[in-house]
Image (tube, rainbow, N blue to C red):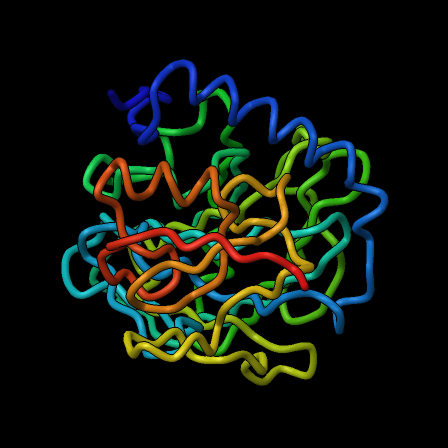
Length: 276
């Protein structure tokens, strides 16, 4: 049965949750090893399906907007960010009829294991004191169309940001940098639409997340499982064809009647692959 993390429910049993913690700790031990140039990282985009009920996204999952109202706009990154990995977020549309604005933070919990229907309406205050979440609101004067917020986590566990490449500000501290950290964004209040930025201010180059059967976004056999981060990819999800998980996590997906983490097609069978 789901495990409650504050107002968010993780789709795993207590035993599975403890195993997941062990796997996260194992990932944490790799932190220094994984500090590679950004050009070698897998593409960063918004998580395709774990998102607030009012969130829509474009086909590349780089642009996200709130359909209506002022809340239920929570989104995550598709993968953990690395220490000192700088993420650019452009505010592309605002709505002056509301108050408040963009909230940012990180979580140690993989959004792929969360129940989207259990996400709270707001990150602040709903997740501010929840274990494994660090969230805070940006100053109101940042909430202007065209503003680019750049942010990163340093090795001391400080969440830092700049506005339009200006001076650095500290948003929060105390993040557990020994664990993987997914970015959490709340498209709240006056902030109505945001877009992930590339290093030069343009959209990052990344394959689109597609619902077709071609495994364009699959991980290779040399990469870590997208779910546990500790075992290598060694299985094909049938019938979409994506290779993005280890056999153990694939069996869990099949047992839970879950869907492919990439294209969201139903998983009918797990096919283990072997090197020649």
